[in-house]
Amino acid sequence: MKRFVIGNWKCHKTLADAESWFDAFAGMYEPVPEVSVILAPSFVCLDGLSGYVKRLCLDNVSLAAQDVSPFPKGSYTGAVAADMVKGMVDYVIIGHSDRRRYFHETSQDVANKVNETVDAGLVPIVCVDRPSAMSQLTALTDIDCEKMIIAYGPVDALSFRIPQSPKEVVEAADLISRAHPHRPIVYGGSIIPENARQYASLPGISGLFVGAASLEAASFAAICKEMAVY
Image (cartoon, rainbow, N blue to C red):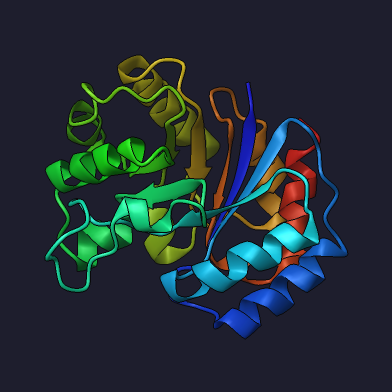
């Protein structure tokens, strides 16, 4: 099965910052055919950065949007429709705990965004957490998307920057795989170069979802290298 390393920059980096990051990363990155590397910059960087990354010719490196609108193009002030980022990204992060917590997104909102993403020909990376995993996953049952990635991110690990125990991560991956078999599951929650190998090697885990450690090119390149071992 394909493996993934996903970096989520959240609300960080200007376009100039992002280009400098990729310049540094390009000098350290060692591509592996089985590992897809995905970076999610802010919306304001996507247009300029998509062309910049293509010119660097980094094998197996793609961009993702951090969110999209649950609606198609139309009269929705401030919204960014999935169709509008097509051509700039290949993936879309949907339902991150930040969005659920600070923007009050519901499981139905997430399902609507997944539908819009799939209709645009993009691959959704759907975030779930343990307390609400079943309701979050149930909302996705009728969505036909073979390439969907599920990102498990326990809220405590994200809030307190303490990774969940490997045992709990395996249990969560098993729960998710029973609801959605054959989908790749990535773990996110305080991943750093020093623990990347431990979590990358867990049964049922197909990759890592990296937050703060992805902001530095050297640390993210080190995590990619650890993933390449498996």
